[in-house]
Amino acid sequence: MSLRFAHLLKFVFTIAICLSLFGCQPAQSSNVTRLTLWQGVNPPPNRDVLQKLVDRFNQAHPNIQVESLYVGQGDQQMPKILAAVVGNAPPDMLWYAPMITGQLVELDALRSIDDFLTASSVKSELDPALLNTMQYEGKTWSIPFGTNNVGIYYRPSLFQAAGVKKLPRTWTEFRQVAKQLTRDTDGDGKADQHGMLLPLGKGEWTVFTWLPFMFSGAGELSNATVTYGNEITPEKVIPSSASAGVNIANSGAIAALQFWRDLMQDGSAILSQPERGYELDGFLTGKVAMQLSGPWTLGQLQATQVDFGVLPIPKGTQAGTAIGGENLFLFKSTPERERAAFEFAEFVMSEEFQTEWAIGTGYLPTNLKSRESEAYKAFRAKQPAVDVFLGQAQFGRSRPIFPGYNRISDNLGRAIEAALLDRNTPEEALKAAQQRLDLIFK
Image 1 (cartoon, rainbow, N blue to C red):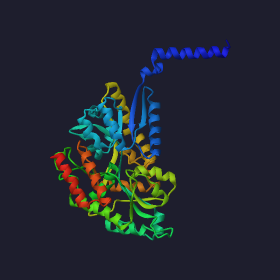
Image 2 (cartoon, rainbow, N blue to C red):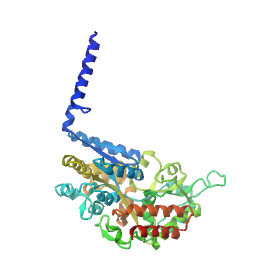
Image 3 (tube, one colour):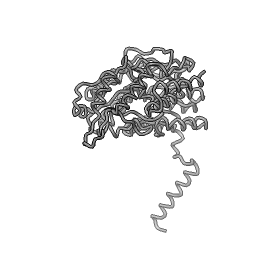
Image 4 (cartoon, helix red, strand yellow):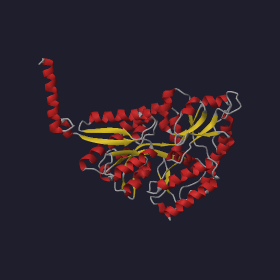
């Protein structure tokens, strides 16, 4: 037997003994708490930013190792999340929009974090205007991972080529500019450049990007609202009960949906592929001059070197936008795993994480110290679009977090799609949706 072959047999024998004694994990893994984070961070470059931060946490915490797993966009995640909860196999942590809070609380899936937060030194650094996204029925269920709101990205070079010299500030001005930007650039008699891309589909993306127009048209999702906030981001949110009086067929909502339909009938807007209104292909190639998105898109656009700017949501009767962002939830497990998960949550809340996350992705920091850091101030100076999102945040409103929000969203999505595809008028579509919701909630 050769010496080389003998060494090989010894190595295989050693591995076999190791596996028989400790299973598939190395011996030292018994002292390591391994956590799973489910997330739907998009676009892909933002996932790279998250992975770098997760790696940094893992390096600084050898006894806690977090595995970050991309499990699809929001609508794709929901069946997986609910199946995991019902099957008693959820992840340790979840990155998701806070509207899911009530549903997960009803399923008794979440670990309330009030005791952890009370003892945390980072709590005082959180933007207090975000507290309403964390709390439901008197308890705290999540921490804000990042915040944002909806604005309109535009291509300055296309504005210049079309002779547009002034950014639109009202619905009337916006409609006119969208017409001006819709052009036949190749001379074949058909428009190959459109002023605006509107999202097609019934999913949450369509609803989320339409709500700013409803809010700017003085519309509400409910007959009753509660005001929260401070001088940075005052917000209105629906109380944590579906019985507050859902009303989606109000005059502001009808006007907002009519505005979107007018853009379509003018021929100055085109629809995205179904449920893919967040994709930027047409914007990047110059096929559309304006597109709805948020600060999370800044990093992706910066990497393309394509010219772009951001303008606030145009006013109907008032300024308005929709507050978005995702929170970090801790699922019930064991005391040891829950404590380890909150250590990662504290890292997410920290000035260090929030500054790097904001600069790398464009999300607005949730940590007040991060907003005032020299690094973030330098980022804002280089990227003035950030100030547009920071500036209009004061007019933003959050989506409700009570368990029935998914029903509201589903029916709003159906109404928006029906109006954009000319199946119903905006008023007919919204009244039909309201009738369905009345049956559900009453």
